[in-house]
Image 1 (cartoon, rainbow, N blue to C red):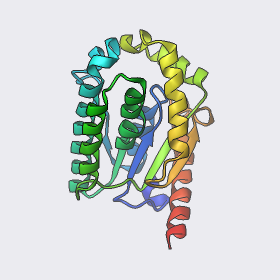
Image 2: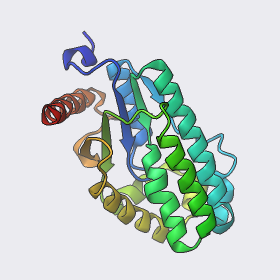
Image 3: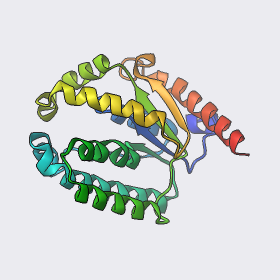
Image 4: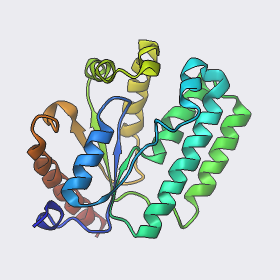
Length: 222
């Protein structure tokens, strides 16, 4: 018996993993997909043509980067819809609009015209039938020191060259965002409460929490 069957998690569920850069979204995505025998929807970082340029010049490339992310995530939303669910998704489309695009607009690194264009595209996508809202959003949280340690350990050059103040601001914005997020049920997990690298079997405790949270939220809907 697999963990999905053991804990009665619906076979067509869509679970999204959210959290700031370096918090371990991809690790959690792959571990949960393996445990539940779900497909993955992973963020394409290595093939992103704008990411390096963006980190070198926020003002010039922020709009291009956000439009690219929006298009890629919408394609993933359509793919999940066509398969009928059964996915673990690495990062949500809500983070792009609620955190990244908004931050660049407020800081002046995205023009008001570009921001309005971006928001109009996002709103149009949400209204299509190809946009399944997640059954659950898992928010991975930790202290800024923990996050910076993980970014340093990961060692991506473009992230190492980014000022620490950027990650600090991102951390604050993520906390503000999740505290006001209501598009779907949210389960918050602290990254210090599990260790999927050294104790891979600890994924069952997380699956148990997911099942319990999904059951509670379904009861509240009735």
